[in-house]
Length: 93
Image (cartoon, rainbow, N blue to C red):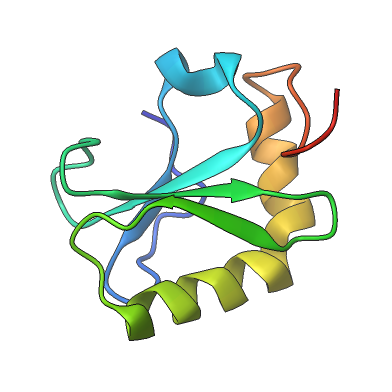
């Protein structure tokens, strides 16, 4: 399960699974178990904005922090994503 970073953001790891690379770029946020159960899921647009598909157990404040972090780091995160997937950002063909 590839993590975008080894550190946590707002108390959560940001990652994706090798099974979900058939979708457009997105970010799961989960605490220590790194499972989709209870995790949040953010689809990432080409400008770094995100669409929250699932909030999981995260509160509004945690979601806002993670969205801001993704916005600031999405280009670097995309490099990691593109190692595993040919699919692009949310909303792109």
